[in-house]
Image (cartoon, rainbow, N blue to C red):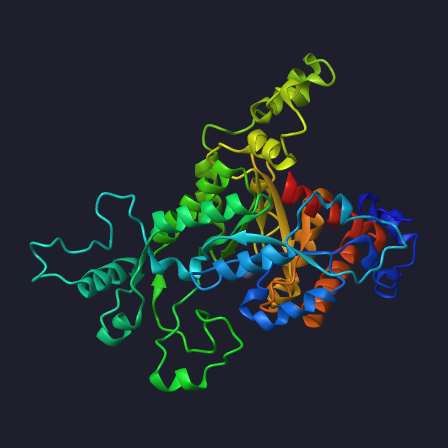
Length: 437
Ligand SMILES: [Zn+2]
């Protein structure tokens, strides 16, 4: 069975030849492999492959106006309905190819944050003209004012500005996301986050429309060149914070995107932890507490001990919600395709952090640059075994995504010194904890 080389000192490791059997073994799909972050609704036809995939569950992300309902429809047909224990069955008699389930995630990606305006602040960037001064101000003016305020540098080109959609109030996004989360009790919030590197694509030219690939869900970049315009970080933060609060209110996990924004991402999430940090006991304090009491004291905030009132009418998800909902921060967070350093992980994993933070890796992002490749090993090594997830982050379901998922599973196992069986089981247990708590 499994060998945990990573805890052995170097000299002990060197006694064993550095054979890497993980690459020769058949992949144990029957133990349950999970894709913690992907976008198959970007290519709807690819969802037909769900019937034949060996992956047990895909966590599928919504990102923008065009894909929220698509994610809901796929979840209505293929969504998980119960605990994953039935899905993580280790019986060898289980057919590996028995169809793939999905966990839906509803959220607004930072790349599309400019399409929303924050209507919770006193002077929103978009405000419709009142009837009295309708002569001096139009909806178009209000739209232009919004984009000039939230984009940087402030765009001046009238044709670029008019090509952008009329912005949607943030409150509408939050209420429709709340409805989706209510309809799907196991749904996550995602994809949300911050991105300093992102620039808006240039406007679509009339000629582009006739040549666009109809198999792709609208709203994506689709090969357009990039404009110089970025979304103000403060605006991205406001959009993200509202969704973090919703996840906290509903007791749902979040899948988080962070590019060139590791410090500000941490600060944004840490702001919603304020006042809820876990008390970190000193060694002396721990000794004073009777065995067993320590755990309940640190998690007492989360517990609802009215178990006597539990009856069969109360479903598992209702109990789960009561137990972990109603906080200003999400109970569980996945930093997807994490590109920060091993050192930066320390703050996310600090014992005072009240959310359980998982970190997920994809071949598509983490292995796409030399910098990413160079960092991966130290980051994976620095992560506790129970916080690692694996993902494809691809924009379609199918053999390619599954192949890349398998490659990342193998790579993580190799870095951790796990055999595949142990690695797949460990990551499966982590996925279950990420979804259900
Ligand atoms: Zn993504």
